[in-house]
Image (tube, rainbow, N blue to C red; front, side, top):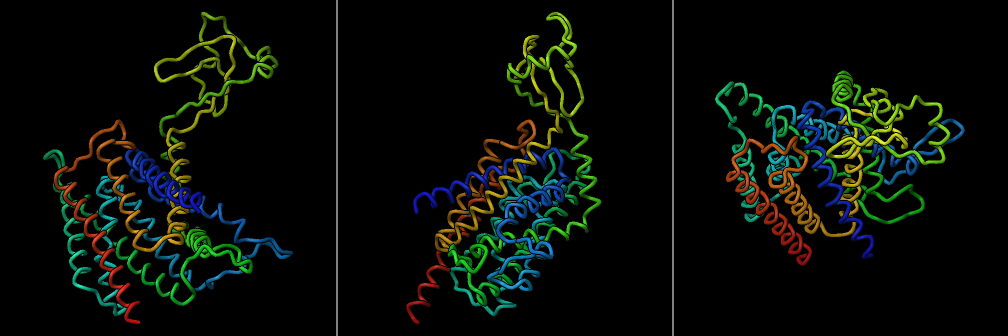
Length: 398
């Protein structure tokens, strides 16, 4: 039990925080790569779950038995696809990572309004007050980065920024509807659990995570042109070289067939643009070292490939961690842990500056930023405590 708990926490904090860092690194250099990043994230989570949810029959591949029928997933898939795509697309409109993190935490007001209108939910005074505090925090955060650093093209910059805020707001609305649909689905078919019923392929949380990503893959056809243009932009970016030492037993066989220059000459293929090549130049952070007796295998890839790979892997870890967390602790504990996780991501972005290109400071008013962040965190915790108290009172009355 302790091992499972530690694994889940490491996935939530290690996976989600690392994902935020790599996402900021990618979007700071390629702000329009949102669709490509989203596609890679969906693809790797789908690939990870195929072996659990797809089987081969005499007629080809087919889906294994599910706890929840396929139709209830379809509406969730469309909404989840739109939310994910819009959230990553917002970076193309000069949305700082800190604003992105805090703004996405402000969905309580949307969820409350939609729940009141469509699900006829009622809320206590404490819940409404907490949501009001969260809304103030989101407003402060939004205004903290709304002013450009210079007077050049102020109106244009403001329009671009407000467009990004509009995209994030639309994503929050879709996310609110997604929450309503998921509540209805889980009320009808049961909430995610970690039970291992042998009649089904996997626990509910694994099934939900797989189908939300897998069924959305065909929808990326609608943004195929963006995917291709973003792929070309990343592939034509600066190259990064990675060298691996060839074992002496193998290099002794290969070296005689290679045109080795003398020690004083130009290194072997020093600036080769090949994807895979041999060299005797070992690079470090400060210099390039030439060793005529050594043989290195050099792999040259676009510099964005490694952060993109890390981002997709950490997104998988983050999604697994959050879904596992929902089956191990109460909803209040989940909320509190995710609030702390977002605070850590915020610190890594604003104070440490990990992920930003050349660690350039973001154009934000730090006083307003931290005030907004504090209000959002305080309001979220207050809402969770008020909800937990309401739930406990209802159970006692029953």
